[in-house]
Length: 194
Image 1: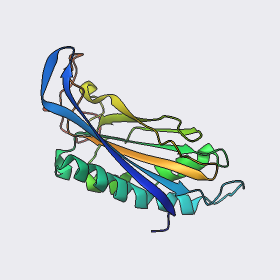
Image 2 (image 1 turned 60 degrees about the horizontal axis):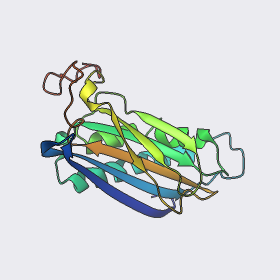
Image 3 (image 1 turned 60 degrees about the vertical axis):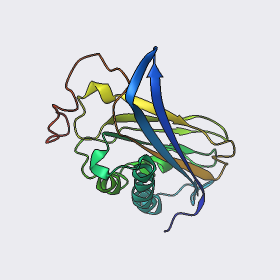
Image 4 (image 1 turned 135 degrees about the vertical axis):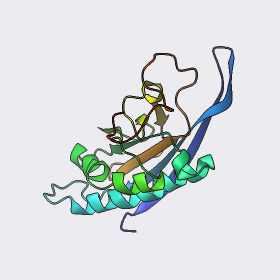
């Protein structure tokens, strides 16, 4: 792996009760975060190819860790998302280079499809700051029950010369969805929309 990883953190969230109603089975989300060295911290670099390649590596690594953490097969994943926070020595384009050109394909392989765009966010930050990872249905963007998110923060990351990269997956939508629209069961996943 070309990424210099300082640490990886993994979190699984289960919701068993919402507004006094039992959620059975519970809705589950997993988020995996890698804290990596930013090879371009403190300098302007025209060619961001090294970060693009790191994105591909992390898409596979973090996607697989999330699926394993939920104890399901990749095809049982229902939604996904990605996010990155760059320390103050970097720039937003460093996060974009990791998230966009190549991270998606290996993540889709880990979740066994993924016709829809992978929702994403990027920001600059400092240690302990919250990184929001947006979530959307992996095969059909119009499945409203899966518009969601998960937060992650690490007390010591990102440092000035680091990037925090997160991937999240779920085995369901929000608990008690009732705003209508296309359901998970109705989604065809042919065009990434429906």
